[in-house]
Structure formats: structure tokens, C-alpha cells
Image 1 (cartoon, rainbow, N blue to C red):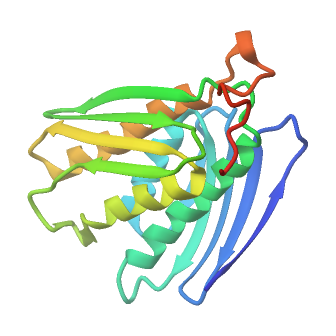
Image 2: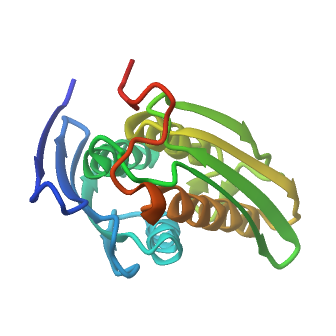
Length: 210
């Protein structure tokens, strides 16, 4: 079992850092929800780096990730734990979630592939995943690991997340359109609604873990 140490900046800043250390991975993540889409990502897995760069660029969330993992075994632990750490940082940066739009939806194409992502920053985490692949690998990367990343991210960030690929032939395109759709939906959901900047977007008055 690993340990996570977390720190947050001033209350008005939506910036958070997470350090996750286990026997399998060592990961450092910093996010700024109000950034410009600047990224510095190094996981030791080129394709995962590329997808996390898409997440940052299209959500406008600044993202720094440094990960060292047991990639000599396979990419599973590094992929899943990176999703956990980024999700934990997003959750911490969101704070009590006051003022956020809360919901976001995006359809993103990449050539012949089209994917939709729907996000609710509900603090009731779940993933509905309707994405299939025609091959078990993209390069050296197991395509089944992408569901693991999305599951870990949604669970740790406290998101209700639905991802559905409508069609596509190229597995790279399907995966990349999934990350881009998540990024654009997340960008909507975490944006501050100036008409309700001081209130939590729930009739319960809270978006707690309960």
C-alpha cells in the first residue's frame, strides 16, 4: 500500500500538488486548474505522455507530472497510479467546489473517430466506459490500460464520468479523441460560473464525499 502526501496553495488558488510513492511507482504531480494548458510530463511511457499533454492543452489545466515506475514489468502500475495522482490533485484543487459550473460535455473527433465525454464534478465517483478497440496494443501499450487510467482518474478526482466512442477505425485516434473529449468536458465543468461564484452547485448545499 502506498502513501500520498498532499499540499495546497492559498485558498483562492486552484493549485495542488500530490506526491504518490509505492513499491511500484514514485509520482509527483502539480495541477493549476486556472492555467493556460502548459505541461511538463514525463512518465517513461511515450504514448501516455502524449495523452496527458492532450489533457492539459485542451482543458487549459497546467499539468506537471514526473513518474518513475516498474515499466520493466509492464505499463499497468505507472498508468493507473498516474491517473490516481492526477485525480487526487484535481480533487484537492477543486476544494469545496463552490462556484464551478459542475457539468461538462464535449464531442471530439480525430479524423474518422468520434468520442463523447460527459463530466459531473459530483464527488460521487464512477466511470461508464463505452470504448472498444480492435487491437490489444497501440505500439507497446496495452489498449485495455486506458480504461484503468480513466477509472483511476474519475475515482480519485471525484467525478461522474461517461466516455463513449461512437465510431472509429484507428485505435490511436479513438484513444486520443477520448482524452481530448475528457479535457474539453472537464474544462467546462471546472470553470467558475460568475453568476454563482460563491455557491456550491447543488440543492444540498454541498458536494462532499458523502
